[in-house]
Image (cartoon, rainbow, N blue to C red):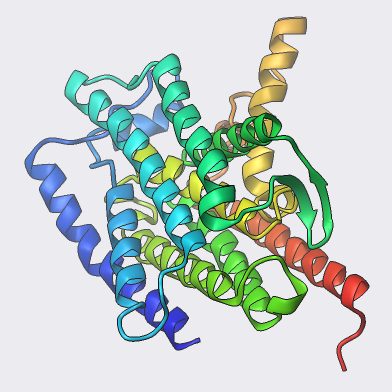
Length: 344
């Protein structure tokens, strides 16, 4: 428990103090965000705002994770695997952001290159995980509800989960603080889930040490997101960029696999799912009818064009994210009670 509190505290203050340093560094080098011409007209005023702020989140979380293990908890294979995935996805996002800034355009890595980068991380996770961290090869809903997979089917499933979640967070990162605030809530849920597994280790596949390590990671990242949000809240002084959104999405997928809550992630990250479905529905309807379902997708832009204030959209979408988190935690606890029995 102390290690979790240390991780959260260090992550919060590292992000609070480190983000202004990142802002200053990127401003001095002219690393300002280019804005899409096809986006809402109001966003043009945000052009030049420093981006790649996800760097601050990742570095703060890494520092917090390391400090939390000084003299107390030990690094677990599962924790190291999950953090490696977090950093690797951040590297793909960083390359994407860096190309955008150097080329002065809103297009970074092409789809094929980004696809290959995410695929390489997914294959590494799916092949190394079962051997290094003893991760089960399955599609898991929660607890004992799971479906075993072959090695190659598991690789494909990990790829779908990792790319889907990272791209969903990336789509949500379209308004100041929207993705960072929503991610804070979801990582808060995973802190509770991992800690519960630690306290009830005999009822889950995860060893107690691995579950504790995952709780530390979740606490460190949620605190880093909260510290970053202090500077990312509207009007944002810095954007997280793909560096942050791909890293956070990849980490959520890795946490879901490690805790056997892969399908439950759809509920916990309900806002990210909603944003993704809005894009899929927009494309499907437009291709079949030639008409737009929304004024613009992802759906937060639709409400912008309806005249909603940006802060109104952000707060209401945070509420939606919170509802998903509350429902997901309720389902997690209900499954435990159904499988183990009422607590005495």
